[in-house]
Image 1 (spheres, rainbow, N blue to C red):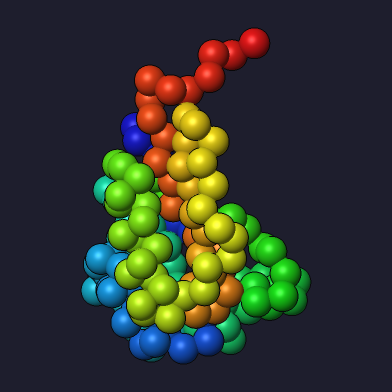
Image 2 (tube, rainbow, N blue to C red):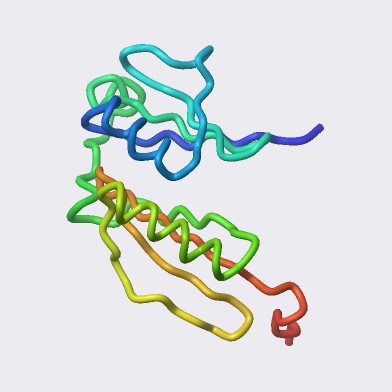
Length: 136
């Protein structure tokens, strides 16, 4: 059986977040969408639940991190090419994201980093399969 992953992220303004991620090309599952949450479809097995902060707080006794000030998670998202990485970042910035680090080229992997409207750090990357360094 294939496993699925549901990443839950707190957001301040659900409509604003949906507009932002729609501009990046993501779709949403209406079955799991209401005034408190929406299900962003990343792939057949990966979903991001965007939950308004008061609703999100109901799932944890710990305080919600301010992702603008602290790193809570790095969301690495594979792309099919360097151009796709650059295009994703350009769309994100046009929709209001902030570049958090300059592009990094490790030879076998190319990566960029942007913070979404709520400060969550997304790391789109391209890894050339034939350029991965051998294991020691």
